[in-house]
Length: 537
Image (cartoon, rainbow, N blue to C red):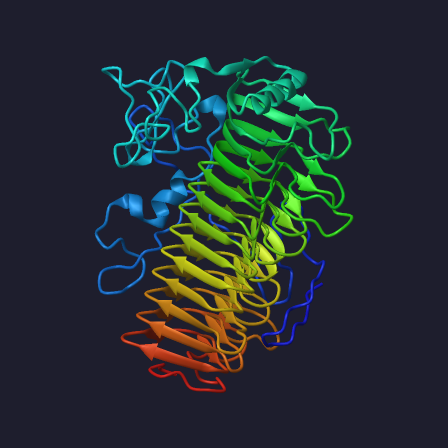
């Protein structure tokens, strides 16, 4: 069932042993216990009137303490740590209140209060007390210079938005008319299910080619279960689609198409706020990408949820040479047959902050796979994901930056229970705890190409394990000719069946300032092909 990969920078072959379609895969290999994921912690109310956040997860703080020791908060406001944002991430159930996921948020005639003081107009014109709308950062009124109060970001008056009756044909007609008049603001019937029974040119709705905002009001857009395969939206050249408080489900792209629910062309833009993508997929006859979203343009995502989506690459999102920005969102139970159970970055720029990745699965990179381009993850929780290699994260190209995040309780059937680095990377102010693998690198595995390196700073690598006949490097495995630099880092209480249990160094490990490599079993570093300076064997 488990692959036997040679150690080195070469690309690993794909396997089929963990295809799970959104369910966490458990290990049954000899000597490696079943992954035991911590139950989500109870959520804290965000305001005195708000109910507990629905569906959040808790990390245990990914930042470093004063003096460079991991796990503390630097005395900063709690809004800046991974635990807080892990608790807050995700899209609350619309039937239980839409805005419980952000402190200070509220709905009603006064609109929605966003982080940083931004105020979003509601149906009553979005005016604050005194009749004036609060502006964005920098004091500009909503809609940009010269636009009057009450306009949305595209300049359309929200008070004059077009209400769309509960009919899929009415929705298609409204989008067509909005395109024809150069854009528009559509308001869907509250909690209506717009069920699409047929598509055209691979899409269930007209291609968006103008700035269009759709306020879902808790509505759902779904492909009929027995309908032919088609995605729900395509954002074409010049299109700028904003979705709010909406659920997209059962989108299924036809063969050779990308994006189960939404495809964003290179000159298109997509903006999501409080949007749920559930059970979308791409036809798996050929090699397809982006179970929920395939982005080749610009996509920004806030306070949204992705669950149960499936594709070959990018179970939830495929970012191909585009710009993807994700914040305060949650990814659970998404699956990729190949790379990136939740997100696959292929040559683009992907920035992720204050988000949760839980119980996603893939062949490489259970949660996130970086394949060229730039991938940044900050203040996020990567927990209980699974893959053959890189149970949580996998870097296969470009540059990977991970900051103030928790990579915990992930599982790999091969290398890198928490993380696999095969290209340049920075990991700092983070926790890599309690991950498991069957071959090498329970916490971190490096298999770098020539001239690549990994810098690990102010990070805790603790409680990870590998278990197998020749498994080594319970904490960190450094492959031949690889270069890893450790600064103010702890490698503690990791375990492997064969020595060393802490760091197995087959390349070059350079240590700076104060590091702790202690209490690993059967040894800390003894048994490595090359020594590790400062390691107490």
